[in-house]
Image 1 (cartoon, rainbow, N blue to C red):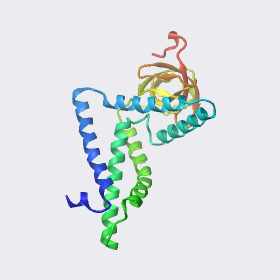
Image 2 (image 1 turned 180 degrees about the vertical axis):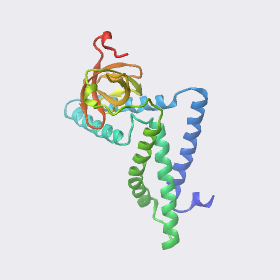
Image 3 (image 1 turned 180 degrees about the horizontal axis):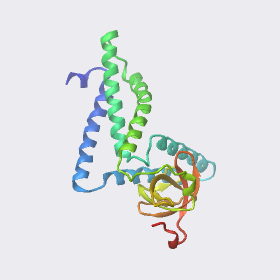
Image 4 (image 1 turned 120 degrees about the horizontal axis):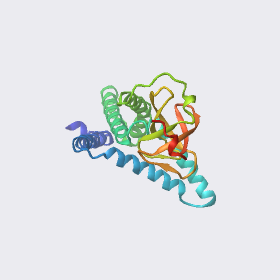
Length: 228
């Protein structure tokens, strides 16, 4: 266990230990049926909403812009398509493994490792693209119904059911929608109205399409519009 206590290895060793603990929690949740993923997803979304809604005047505007940036960053990491807890496990694994390998290589070549204050930020920046790739792979592997190559623009005006997390401004959630042929598609949805939110199971109306399979939605105004 010398690698855990070696100079410059502490943050990476701790990351792997936390990852192992989270993996155990994830396994327990699968066995018991308790959805830890939903709890974590709702906590993250709720925190972003609270941050955006606090303050007043220019302060509130600045906080809203910061929240929007964070939301876009989380969407870049595929939050909404993949549970936050799973993305966190991927991040901790990549961060810990890359850090330990890099520090070990530096010791072998230079005879010493980088100080923690330099190594941790460098490995963090190197890890993020890998984490995004890993989360994207998980998004493709997660169970879902087969989707046809229909033009997503034709889905505007149809209703969808939120299936993953809670959709909030700046933090889209996954939703299931049927096209005119009855084929199910999974898309990302975000409320049109600032402050609105749609929890898992909510029926929403797709009103506008954006890049990347993302849609702006409103609350379904008429139960007769539900696409069965």
